[in-house]
Length: 365
Ligand SMILES: [Zn+2]
Ligand SMILES: [Zn+2]
Image (tube, rainbow, N blue to C red; front, side, top):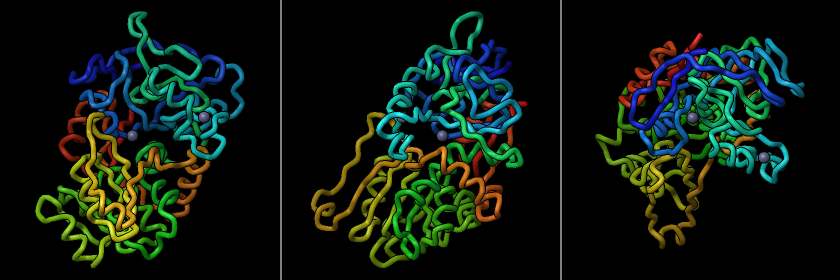
């Protein structure tokens, strides 16, 4: 089984033959049909986010169940599944209240770089190789916990299913789950990568208006306009806050900041109208801090809130989003970017850094 291994940050990934153990109790082996290329993978390759090495990267994927371990009844070989990067234990306070992105066990597991029931199923020359977020889908196959998969209809294209597992549900989820009453309200989306463009699709679905998108790349802004944005601001060429005020008069009710930088969070807060809310959805460097003018925060009753994984109930909402796609309500085909083979994974990451448009997908098999 070939997979893309990171031996240390700031080194190119190497695609090598790994041993993949059979699924244990509560585990499933999945043949990967598509894996999205996400900025979070880049954060691990450059050391912004820490993980144990060696590790197989990739956390946004979909594929076909090949084998199930003892005690697995939710899927059988031949079923198509979406992989989720935060397993849902189903028992903790957060899972019980429909917020599995905050799952207590899932968080512990995310830091162990193993599987939920302990240990790793990947090895190279008898040395353990770690799992990224329990997924590790830059690979021909993976073994995952049954809490990390969601069964979906087999007729959904795997490239679409893969990107719904991270980018789409993160961007659409913050709109659907956090922007209460957004129809007719102004939204600003900062960053037109996979998550930002998915937020555009969500904002269009719920009827937010205007839908303003800011980025520093014109080709990404063109894609945002194609997906439903009403206004595009190239913030390298014009002042973002002034441009937002010129469009809206008093600012926007909502900002989705999909980049994860201090400067853009601060621009987001300055772009809000009285009573508005900024959602920070992009991860940055762990040492980053944000400055917010205190009196403006109080006097204008502004809010700054984080949102992880679209604040979504993944097990419920991934199938709902795919059903919306199947009924023609979501232009997810237009969200897809370039396709790469597994041995081109490093090229895909370099292209993402350079500003590839749309969500790129690796097709390993
Ligand atoms: Zn991701
Ligand atoms: Zn839980």
